[in-house]
Length: 159
Image (tube, rainbow, N blue to C red):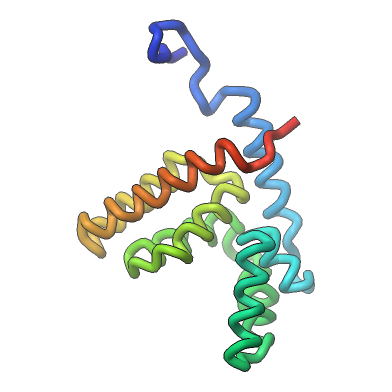
């Protein structure tokens, strides 16, 4: 048991029933992705409908073939060597060290949807200080904080 700001005992977040249910629901989303699934639907499950729509609009605007979406979300993301959770943590690491903040935000959200915890995201970003330096790490942590604060209010609560 931990103490909250007022000194009262509270459950460790890892054991909180709402946290456990939300993590189970999010992991179910990711575990439903299989080879042969519609790539656009896979994208919506992981990065959300808004991000998927933006990607499709940009590709159409610049006349980029939709085959790229098919490749990323139909081939790469459907492979079963890594779990979707591991895949999203890899994306968070790469995007953090490359300082790609918009995509980092999207993939932190996707990581949450696959059941990744706040501590795990923070640890991956912290590890990137070795490769990208502390400024990249701090910016990544700030983005992660914004996402987690917003997700606490906007992601649907498990029932």
